[in-house]
Length: 248
Image (cartoon, rainbow, N blue to C red):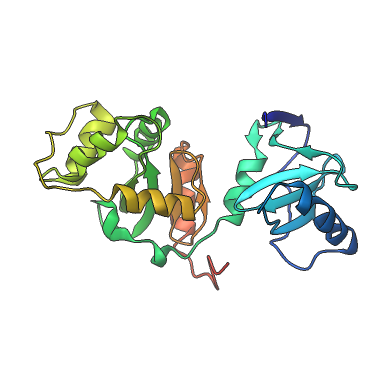
């Protein structure tokens, strides 16, 4: 199915409620749209959006849109033409909140700066140009612990580069040298393995479909962490007490 980009003039990220009881209209759309989504595809929920009379359809971590008769399915992005924010990606990130403590951090490269009090986990591919952009921002971030999951999805040699980095004497240093300065790590010694399959499985479980994807201590995530002030704010805010982050 070809992806279309819907450019809708809206003013802010829609204040859609988290998955809850559907209204009668939403329940009717749910019943109609599910068998039309394809074999073995389960619709997790339907919610009315504040734009263009569309209804949000949530399935397996993805967000689609339909009309009130479930006749048409809109596949692609809703973009705020005022800010050019990808509202569909932001909504998917909102729905993808996790319990940070459940992440298998033993499969990540650990980098500590300053007191390391603030924490973040990042899914990255060694061939990801946007990951390099993220690290230009991270250079100015202090007092943080960064857990890097090497998610090899972009190129045939991604897994080789990741293994070399993982098997280096100092993984954190090897990763920094590669992602910031394009200095390759020495070839991994025979018998050394990296958690390639485990991270791929984790990415699939969390519906991580692009790199970089960042998770904060409160379980929220974003695919857009390039602004220094915004990233600092998210890191600090995530340390504040929260009632049940990532419970769903």
